[in-house]
Image (cartoon, rainbow, N blue to C red):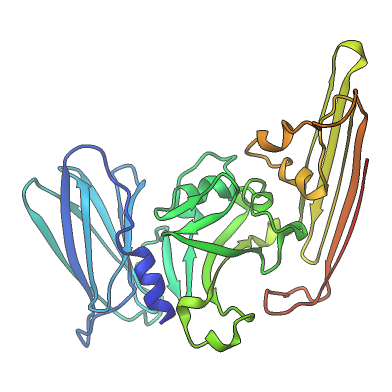
Amino acid sequence: MKQTFFLSLLLGWFITAVGQNGKLTGSVRDAETNTPLELATVSIAGPDSSMLAYKLSDANGIFTFDKLPLKKKLLVSVSYTGYLGHYSTILLESGKTDTLKVLLALNLKDTNAIVITTSVPVRMNGDTLEINPAAFKLNPDAVVEELLNQVPGVTIWSDGSITVNGRKVQNLLVDGKPFMGSTDTRVATQNLPKAAIDKIQLYQEYDRSNIGLQSQPQDSLLTMNIKLKESSKKGYFGKAGAGYGTTRRFESDLSFQMYNKQSSVGVGGGINNINKNIGNLQEMFQNTTYRNFNPNLYSVGRFGTNGINQNHSLGGVVTHNFIESANSRQNNRLTVNYNLSG
């Protein structure tokens, strides 16, 4: 049933090409038994190898693409776990629906076989939907948020929350753990570079607070897990700012975070005498993001106070996971927070 849920997420996902549109429909079957292959990944790439569209085949092995560019050579790639991939080129014409029948052969690991490799944008791995960052062309300095914005059906809202075809992602994890001990998704999505990501996983977890509903997948929680490359499992980032104005008015702030496979440390602080509310440590971390400046937090004044007051805030958080392979089902982490403000 989980596969049915993810199939419904992907049906209708495509990127519209500019200009006139063509249509492609087809089927994916086992070459030996002729049985349909459900959840095969079918992707369309343009002449410049950029990804135009992708879908998963349905229970009958059927796939359909609309709004594809006409009179351009398009590369169709089909992949399915345990089978050799299929690669072919098509040229669509106006007023005609092209049909493609794909027969996939089992991968017998023939060392003499010629294997063509391409970046598959999305695939099912058991009950988990996996997004492949390598399949999306972005600037070298792109972060996770920019990657997710390229995935059809995924929406990132102004408060950092993420929805997938209208369904909210309840938990965002990095290597199975909350990133920097924060519940704000922006700390991860706006700081982690796309180049550091191995894959992004989407899967369902039953809501353990509703034991009586565990048999109902529609009541489960949608979880997104960002898997880092082995070489990127430790790093650091931060931000510093300062300003000085007339009549000795000033403000400054500093935040710094570092992480490795099992631990993370974050510190932050700020001081000003312009009646600006600094907020707590989590609010400072929200404004440490690489991508975006959040005016909602930085423009809050302390109304209702008399005169010009000096405000300060200092905080730190340390999170340690006692088992390196910890995940959301294993609560074995210790988090210590400290905040001082005035």
